[in-house]
Length: 425
Length: 63
Image (cartoon, rainbow over all chains, first blue to last red):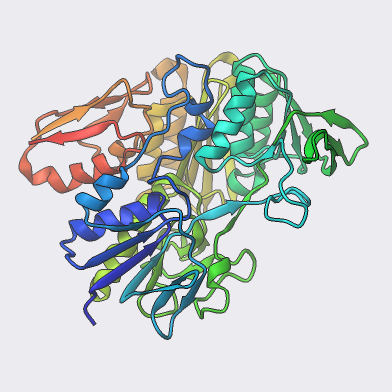
């Protein structure tokens, strides 16, 4: 069946790249892009990095629009539905439900991304309503809230020592503000980068003067209601400590935004309810594809194992591929991805390529303490499958190439050791 | 065709090098170096992929 109407649900990076790729592929039919935020697509990674910087620094307080609404409408001829949430999917009738409206599709790309998790009692959509002073950092509106608090010098407690939480802590320390990070794990980031790197990350926090509390959970939030509205006052920890707070930033992970797909027939992951797709981005339902944070994708590079990645490059690549495949399923090919993300902490650049799911993680360069860099390589059998690098930007893409080529382990170790030692730089 | 790199915007994230290593390389200073600013037309597909892959939109192709 030829596609005359392609509908893309989700108007962030993956959705944007989907509509761009559709037009670039020569698709001339109807193109609908639905997004629940009122903003045109914008770049999220800087929101927890440069956006939080003090005025006058590059990128401070600045939102980078990826494309304007006008450009989407006029140049890409997109029927743009911003501020509109998909509420359901009727795969039998091939219709996306937007409240009472039904939008028919021939092909559909699901790119609804993920939503941050809330602590109990803090979800603005919950029975108690919003708790002021508690925020996520996902959207531009969230980022403004955090930036305003930093500007005002407020007391900030970060819950979760993952990448978002650590970037917020870094922004606070950059301004000389005290900040406390509460992490339930004894070693943070073990799932995303492994324990070896988690330990190194703890060192970065401590060296920067962040008060990092490991192995302790949040028992509850103390609140006050000065003007009838609930407002946070302090964070109570499971070890009995109480931390006064003006702003609590939650960085405790995300879940795929798939509530609207429940019962639709699109197969979802048993655990986190992400959309299950094969290596071509196809779901189990004909005509329905998925990409970005929302999707568990089979990756041929890593023995077909499934990854659900919350990475910029993954959303960009897979969004484009999903649209191309949706328009021409017969030509759909497996997409090989080397996962890649980066983070900026306390003036350090952290980069990760590949997968941390490995038989061995070996620290091959360990010069952080002396102002140098760090390289950790990940091994499966006799090949290199991943690399974590701090402050050695020159070597990262060369290691990525070796991961993509299923390069031999010993050669990768030798390369990184040589490239990362001060004598060779 | 000419590669234009905005070095004031570049953060050295390296996706251009991943897509087209013959034309881009991140240097020691964490900023991209364009190895050949006027490539032949036959490289347009790779270079377009490199431009699109830049997370900070620091690259453009002219002509």
